Length: 294
Image 1: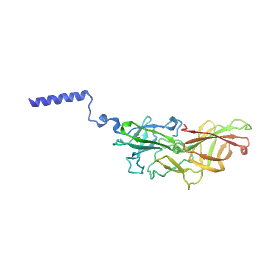
Image 2 (image 1 turned 180 degrees about the vertical axis):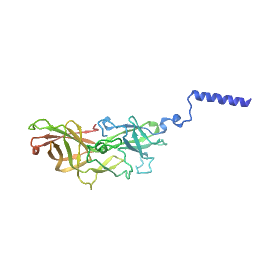
Image 3 (image 1 turned 90 degrees about the vertical axis):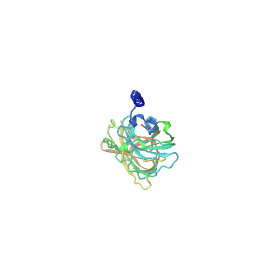
Image 4 (image 1 turned 90 degrees about the horizontal axis):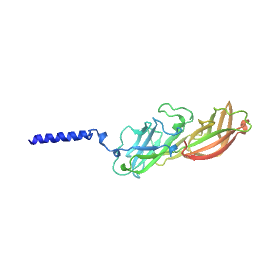
């Protein structure tokens, strides 16, 4: 009789479990706040496409215990690869929260192997007109280093918000027809930025970019970003002496302008090149500065 009662009670519990949708799957029963998720904000919404991240983009994240120094290894999470699906950022494995508070560091594009978090080597592309090929970034996109940090976060805070910011500098070159120029400017041109050092080191704990003091100045080809508009991502640096800076080649004619310049981190600088009939009389006009460019 007691045996019959036990079987009856087990049957009732099994029926109630089925009715409630019980499952042995750990994925189905574990609360969302057991593992780390990310709410990532692109700079233009607060890389380097016109508006946002693209499916297949890859970023790296670190988690350290609150106020602990960021290290290459030995952190709670070390250089975890996240891939953008087109709607959210996903890692190859689940990152589980532990007790306590954490500091979270994110950067884009992803680098592996990573040999230093204090002086991570980084270079902007010399040809930024190259196109994206699947997950392989084009020259312009690969040069646009983004960085974010969220401090003192816990499991109860929900998704970790990472608001990215540009850490390189961008030069936006506008071409304008001078009064004495005959006809219309051609829609296609080659635009070069001369005499900047393309190599740098980055402190991932603070997002600081430092020009390589031993780097050699080079020429960077800018990407067309609009009608009569070309842009290049540059390492932040100062050009103290007047040097050839921007060269525009149209219909086989080169127009070259010199200037001093300070390229600031996270800032878009705009210059207008006024194309004259005489290449020797081309002018440059320095425009405004903006943050969080598109």
